[in-house]
Length: 254
Image (cartoon, rainbow, N blue to C red; front, side, top):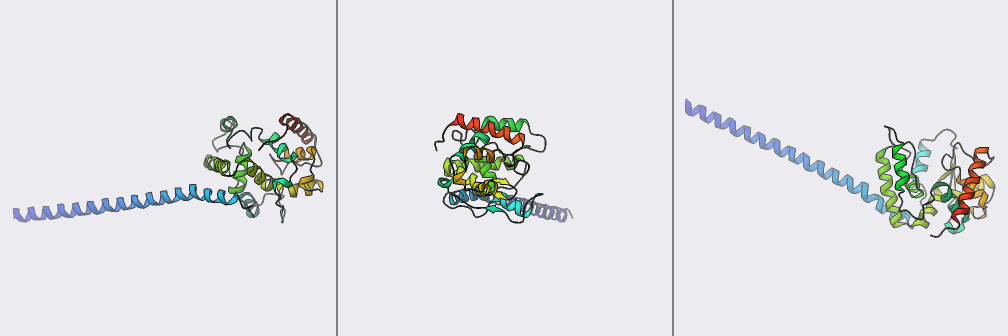
């Protein structure tokens, strides 16, 4: 009788041990799958932008993230058909990049895509929902417009910084400025300096004067509420300020 009990106990213990090994094996298999999925996701998230940035160093984008978001989720006042015409930086008035730098990012030619001082100000002013305003440098704004969609969160901000560092490393300042001036929105559905120059002034981007460049630059913080023409007193004062900054900066050396 005792022999049978001992045999049964051994059998139960053996089954329990086998079941335990099976459970441990299943857990380890799940861990390996999760690890493999995380590594694959990380490789795509970090690797795909490198491929895209390399490609866009040579190829002008036919469409970009911000335009896609506006097309599928149009804000109030967005037109049925947008306006855009790509122009190389050689065909853009030198006053335009100077005005944009004076208005948006006066340390553009000096930093590597990230203005730490300005970023710290944004983070200090942020609430629980994340940053309340967008990127502080032209490089970050370019990354946001080309690769990302409208959103306010620390995760998107971190990814934006990663993209900004990539395009600084691969594109260089002149290509960043060329891309920015061709994709940024100057009014509802008005993308790039060529479309903006023709829409507001009836001239090409190559013909824009220093004063007109300042008029265009001041709308960038909010192109749905600020318009270069007709000028309100606020726009007039902002244009005067940008013009003074342009004179202080002088010319741009890429």
